[in-house]
Length: 298
Image: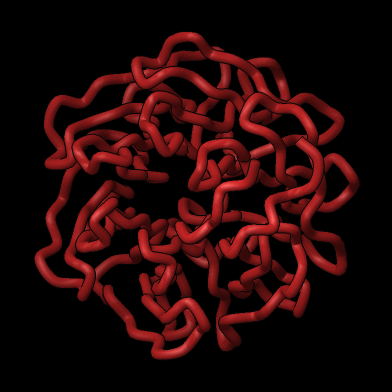
Protein backbone atom coordinates (compact mmCIF):
# COMPACT_ATOMS: atom_id res chain seq x y z
CA UNK A 1 0.00 0.00 0.00
CA UNK A 2 2.36 2.71 -1.22
CA UNK A 3 1.22 6.21 -2.13
CA UNK A 4 4.44 7.97 -1.27
CA UNK A 5 4.42 11.45 -2.75
CA UNK A 6 6.70 12.89 -0.08
CA UNK A 7 8.13 12.31 3.37
CA UNK A 8 5.01 13.65 5.09
CA UNK A 9 2.66 11.47 3.06
CA UNK A 10 4.91 8.62 4.11
CA UNK A 11 4.62 9.60 7.78
CA UNK A 12 0.88 10.23 7.65
CA UNK A 13 0.09 7.10 5.66
CA UNK A 14 2.64 4.48 6.67
CA UNK A 15 3.14 5.14 10.39
CA UNK A 16 0.43 2.50 10.72
CA UNK A 17 2.37 -0.08 8.74
CA UNK A 18 5.47 0.61 10.57
CA UNK A 19 6.79 -0.54 11.86
CA UNK A 20 9.97 0.92 9.94
CA UNK A 21 -6.72 6.29 16.92
CA UNK A 22 -19.41 -9.27 21.45
CA UNK A 23 -21.30 -10.13 18.30
CA UNK A 24 -21.91 -7.61 15.58
CA UNK A 25 -20.75 -4.03 15.62
CA UNK A 26 -22.74 -1.40 17.45
CA UNK A 27 -25.76 -0.02 15.66
CA UNK A 28 -25.32 3.36 17.30
CA UNK A 29 -25.45 6.66 15.49
CA UNK A 30 -21.67 7.03 15.25
CA UNK A 31 -19.62 6.85 12.08
CA UNK A 32 -16.20 5.57 11.10
CA UNK A 33 -14.17 7.66 8.67
CA UNK A 34 -11.43 5.91 6.74
CA UNK A 35 -9.33 6.09 3.60
CA UNK A 36 -9.65 3.75 0.64
CA UNK A 37 -8.36 3.36 -2.89
CA UNK A 38 -11.48 1.48 -4.01
CA UNK A 39 -12.20 4.22 -6.52
CA UNK A 40 -8.66 4.37 -7.92
CA UNK A 41 -6.58 6.75 -5.81
CA UNK A 42 -6.76 7.20 -2.04
CA UNK A 43 -9.74 9.23 -0.81
CA UNK A 44 -11.71 9.73 2.42
CA UNK A 45 -14.90 7.76 3.06
CA UNK A 46 -17.33 7.36 5.95
CA UNK A 47 -19.46 4.39 6.96
CA UNK A 48 -21.84 3.28 9.70
CA UNK A 49 -20.49 1.37 12.67
CA UNK A 50 -21.50 -1.93 11.06
CA UNK A 51 -19.77 -1.12 7.77
CA UNK A 52 -22.99 -0.17 5.98
CA UNK A 53 -23.79 3.00 4.00
CA UNK A 54 -20.31 3.80 2.72
CA UNK A 55 -20.10 7.36 1.41
CA UNK A 56 -17.18 8.99 -0.36
CA UNK A 57 -16.32 12.45 1.02
CA UNK A 58 -13.35 13.61 -1.07
CA UNK A 59 -12.38 13.48 -4.74
CA UNK A 60 -9.28 14.10 -6.85
CA UNK A 61 -6.97 15.50 -7.93
CA UNK A 62 -4.30 13.95 -5.75
CA UNK A 63 -4.80 11.70 -2.75
CA UNK A 64 -6.57 12.40 0.55
CA UNK A 65 -5.58 10.29 3.55
CA UNK A 66 -5.49 10.06 7.34
CA UNK A 67 -8.94 11.35 8.42
CA UNK A 68 -9.49 12.57 11.99
CA UNK A 69 -12.90 13.53 13.45
CA UNK A 70 -13.16 16.49 15.77
CA UNK A 71 -14.65 15.74 19.24
CA UNK A 72 -18.20 16.62 18.20
CA UNK A 73 -18.09 14.59 15.00
CA UNK A 74 -18.93 17.63 12.87
CA UNK A 75 -15.52 18.19 11.22
CA UNK A 76 -12.84 15.99 9.67
CA UNK A 77 -9.19 16.96 9.28
CA UNK A 78 -7.11 15.11 6.71
CA UNK A 79 -3.93 15.21 4.63
CA UNK A 80 -3.99 15.81 0.88
CA UNK A 81 -1.62 16.71 -1.94
CA UNK A 82 -4.48 18.08 -4.08
CA UNK A 83 -2.73 21.45 -4.39
CA UNK A 84 0.75 20.04 -4.95
CA UNK A 85 2.57 19.32 -1.69
CA UNK A 86 0.96 17.37 1.20
CA UNK A 87 -0.94 19.75 3.47
CA UNK A 88 -3.67 19.59 6.13
CA UNK A 89 -7.28 20.36 5.26
CA UNK A 90 -10.51 20.67 7.24
CA UNK A 91 -14.01 19.85 6.01
CA UNK A 92 -17.48 19.31 7.37
CA UNK A 93 -18.30 15.71 8.24
CA UNK A 94 -20.38 15.45 5.07
CA UNK A 95 -17.41 16.47 2.90
CA UNK A 96 -18.52 20.05 2.30
CA UNK A 97 -16.67 23.34 2.87
CA UNK A 98 -13.09 22.14 2.47
CA UNK A 99 -10.48 24.60 3.76
CA UNK A 100 -6.70 24.31 3.71
CA UNK A 101 -5.06 24.87 7.10
CA UNK A 102 -1.34 24.61 6.26
CA UNK A 103 0.90 25.56 3.38
CA UNK A 104 4.56 25.72 2.38
CA UNK A 105 7.27 25.95 3.44
CA UNK A 106 7.43 22.25 4.19
CA UNK A 107 4.95 19.40 4.03
CA UNK A 108 2.35 18.84 6.72
CA UNK A 109 0.13 15.90 7.68
CA UNK A 110 -1.01 13.40 10.29
CA UNK A 111 -3.57 15.69 12.05
CA UNK A 112 -5.34 14.88 15.35
CA UNK A 113 -7.68 17.09 17.40
CA UNK A 114 -7.33 18.14 21.02
CA UNK A 115 -10.22 17.01 23.26
CA UNK A 116 -11.71 20.53 23.30
CA UNK A 117 -11.54 20.69 19.49
CA UNK A 118 -9.63 23.97 19.52
CA UNK A 119 -6.19 22.70 18.48
CA UNK A 120 -4.72 20.24 16.00
CA UNK A 121 -1.47 18.36 16.57
CA UNK A 122 0.34 17.35 13.39
CA UNK A 123 3.62 16.36 11.74
CA UNK A 124 5.72 18.69 9.58
CA UNK A 125 9.15 18.76 7.96
CA UNK A 126 9.12 22.56 7.63
CA UNK A 127 12.25 22.83 9.74
CA UNK A 128 14.08 19.78 8.36
CA UNK A 129 13.19 16.30 9.60
CA UNK A 130 9.60 15.42 10.51
CA UNK A 131 8.65 16.79 13.94
CA UNK A 132 5.44 17.41 15.90
CA UNK A 133 3.66 20.77 15.89
CA UNK A 134 0.36 22.14 17.17
CA UNK A 135 -1.88 24.85 15.70
CA UNK A 136 -5.24 26.45 16.26
CA UNK A 137 -8.28 25.09 14.47
CA UNK A 138 -7.98 27.77 11.78
CA UNK A 139 -4.29 27.01 11.14
CA UNK A 140 -2.96 29.96 13.13
CA UNK A 141 -0.41 30.06 15.96
CA UNK A 142 1.75 27.12 14.92
CA UNK A 143 4.10 25.91 17.67
CA UNK A 144 6.79 23.25 17.44
CA UNK A 145 6.61 20.64 20.21
CA UNK A 146 9.51 18.28 19.44
CA UNK A 147 13.10 18.91 18.38
CA UNK A 148 15.10 15.71 18.17
CA UNK A 149 17.04 13.54 15.73
CA UNK A 150 15.12 11.08 13.61
CA UNK A 151 11.44 11.20 12.70
CA UNK A 152 8.54 12.01 15.04
CA UNK A 153 4.86 11.68 14.16
CA UNK A 154 1.62 9.79 14.78
CA UNK A 155 0.82 12.20 17.63
CA UNK A 156 -2.43 12.02 19.60
CA UNK A 157 -3.80 13.89 22.61
CA UNK A 158 -4.79 12.14 25.82
CA UNK A 159 -8.52 12.38 26.62
CA UNK A 160 -7.88 15.09 29.24
CA UNK A 161 -5.73 17.10 26.82
CA UNK A 162 -2.76 17.19 29.18
CA UNK A 163 -0.51 14.70 27.37
CA UNK A 164 0.46 13.78 23.82
CA UNK A 165 1.58 10.30 22.84
CA UNK A 166 3.66 9.97 19.67
CA UNK A 167 6.05 7.69 17.76
CA UNK A 168 9.68 8.63 17.19
CA UNK A 169 13.00 7.22 16.02
CA UNK A 170 14.93 9.77 18.11
CA UNK A 171 16.72 7.12 20.19
CA UNK A 172 16.57 4.05 17.95
CA UNK A 173 16.69 3.07 14.30
CA UNK A 174 13.16 1.75 14.86
CA UNK A 175 10.16 3.83 15.90
CA UNK A 176 9.19 3.75 19.60
CA UNK A 177 6.33 5.35 21.54
CA UNK A 178 6.86 8.38 23.76
CA UNK A 179 4.62 10.62 25.84
CA UNK A 180 5.03 14.31 26.65
CA UNK A 181 3.11 17.17 28.19
CA UNK A 182 0.84 18.98 25.74
CA UNK A 183 3.35 21.86 25.56
CA UNK A 184 6.16 19.51 24.49
CA UNK A 185 7.88 19.30 27.87
CA UNK A 186 8.68 16.26 30.04
CA UNK A 187 9.19 13.69 27.27
CA UNK A 188 9.21 10.08 28.49
CA UNK A 189 9.81 6.92 26.49
CA UNK A 190 7.18 4.21 26.92
CA UNK A 191 8.42 1.35 24.72
CA UNK A 192 11.70 -0.33 23.80
CA UNK A 193 12.98 -2.85 21.25
CA UNK A 194 12.64 -5.51 20.04
CA UNK A 195 10.60 -4.31 17.10
CA UNK A 196 9.25 -0.93 16.11
CA UNK A 197 6.16 0.64 17.68
CA UNK A 198 3.76 3.15 16.14
CA UNK A 199 0.21 4.49 15.93
CA UNK A 200 -0.53 5.06 19.64
CA UNK A 201 -4.22 5.45 20.52
CA UNK A 202 -5.55 6.35 23.98
CA UNK A 203 -8.57 4.60 25.42
CA UNK A 204 -11.40 7.06 26.26
CA UNK A 205 -10.58 6.88 29.99
CA UNK A 206 -6.89 7.55 29.28
CA UNK A 207 -5.78 4.45 31.18
CA UNK A 208 -4.63 2.39 28.20
CA UNK A 209 -2.73 2.98 24.96
CA UNK A 210 -3.23 0.68 21.99
CA UNK A 211 -0.44 0.58 19.42
CA UNK A 212 1.14 -1.32 16.54
CA UNK A 213 4.31 -3.33 17.10
CA UNK A 214 6.50 -5.86 15.31
CA UNK A 215 8.05 -7.03 18.57
CA UNK A 216 7.02 -10.66 17.93
CA UNK A 217 7.81 -10.67 14.21
CA UNK A 218 4.86 -9.39 12.19
CA UNK A 219 3.07 -6.12 12.92
CA UNK A 220 0.19 -6.68 15.36
CA UNK A 221 -2.00 -4.70 17.79
CA UNK A 222 -0.98 -4.44 21.43
CA UNK A 223 -2.25 -2.51 24.44
CA UNK A 224 -0.35 -1.16 27.46
CA UNK A 225 -1.09 1.02 30.43
CA UNK A 226 -0.27 4.73 30.37
CA UNK A 227 3.16 4.12 31.92
CA UNK A 228 4.20 1.64 29.23
CA UNK A 229 3.81 -1.50 31.34
CA UNK A 230 1.40 -4.45 31.27
CA UNK A 231 1.77 -4.95 27.51
CA UNK A 232 -0.79 -7.36 26.06
CA UNK A 233 -1.02 -8.61 22.48
CA UNK A 234 -4.53 -8.41 20.99
CA UNK A 235 -4.11 -9.74 17.43
CA UNK A 236 -2.21 -12.56 15.76
CA UNK A 237 -1.40 -13.77 12.23
CA UNK A 238 -2.39 -14.57 9.57
CA UNK A 239 -1.58 -11.17 8.14
CA UNK A 240 -0.42 -8.00 9.85
CA UNK A 241 -2.76 -5.84 11.96
CA UNK A 242 -2.12 -2.10 12.40
CA UNK A 243 -3.57 1.33 13.22
CA UNK A 244 -5.81 0.71 16.26
CA UNK A 245 -8.58 3.14 17.20
CA UNK A 246 -10.75 2.89 20.32
CA UNK A 247 -14.49 3.43 19.99
CA UNK A 248 -15.80 6.37 22.05
CA UNK A 249 -17.20 4.03 24.71
CA UNK A 250 -13.89 2.13 24.93
CA UNK A 251 -15.50 -1.23 24.29
CA UNK A 252 -14.30 -1.75 20.71
CA UNK A 253 -11.11 -1.28 18.71
CA UNK A 254 -11.12 -0.74 14.95
CA UNK A 255 -7.96 -1.68 13.09
CA UNK A 256 -6.48 -2.51 9.69
CA UNK A 257 -5.49 -6.04 8.72
CA UNK A 258 -4.38 -7.95 5.64
CA UNK A 259 -5.45 -11.28 7.11
CA UNK A 260 -7.88 -11.99 4.29
CA UNK A 261 -5.63 -10.97 1.40
CA UNK A 262 -6.06 -7.18 1.06
CA UNK A 263 -5.87 -4.47 3.71
CA UNK A 264 -9.34 -3.98 5.19
CA UNK A 265 -10.89 -2.51 8.37
CA UNK A 266 -11.95 -4.81 11.19
CA UNK A 267 -13.62 -4.32 14.56
CA UNK A 268 -12.97 -6.30 17.73
CA UNK A 269 -13.78 -6.11 21.40
CA UNK A 270 -11.21 -4.10 23.36
CA UNK A 271 -9.79 -7.34 24.75
CA UNK A 272 -9.17 -8.76 21.28
CA UNK A 273 -12.17 -11.09 20.95
CA UNK A 274 -15.03 -11.25 18.43
CA UNK A 275 -13.29 -9.89 15.34
CA UNK A 276 -15.53 -8.87 12.44
CA UNK A 277 -14.66 -7.36 9.07
CA UNK A 278 -16.25 -4.01 8.17
CA UNK A 279 -14.88 -3.35 4.66
CA UNK A 280 -14.26 -5.50 1.59
CA UNK A 281 -12.63 -5.17 -1.83
CA UNK A 282 -12.42 -3.68 -4.36
CA UNK A 283 -9.32 -1.88 -3.21
CA UNK A 284 -7.71 -1.48 0.21
CA UNK A 285 -9.14 0.41 3.18
CA UNK A 286 -7.21 1.80 6.13
CA UNK A 287 -6.83 4.39 8.91
CA UNK A 288 -10.21 4.10 10.72
CA UNK A 289 -11.30 6.90 13.05
CA UNK A 290 -14.51 7.09 15.09
CA UNK A 291 -16.87 9.99 15.42
CA UNK A 292 -17.76 10.79 19.01
CA UNK A 293 -21.56 10.48 18.76
CA UNK A 294 -21.69 6.70 19.08
CA UNK A 295 -24.45 5.57 21.40
CA UNK A 296 -23.39 2.97 23.93
CA UNK A 297 -24.75 -0.52 23.40
CA UNK A 298 -25.63 -3.07 26.07
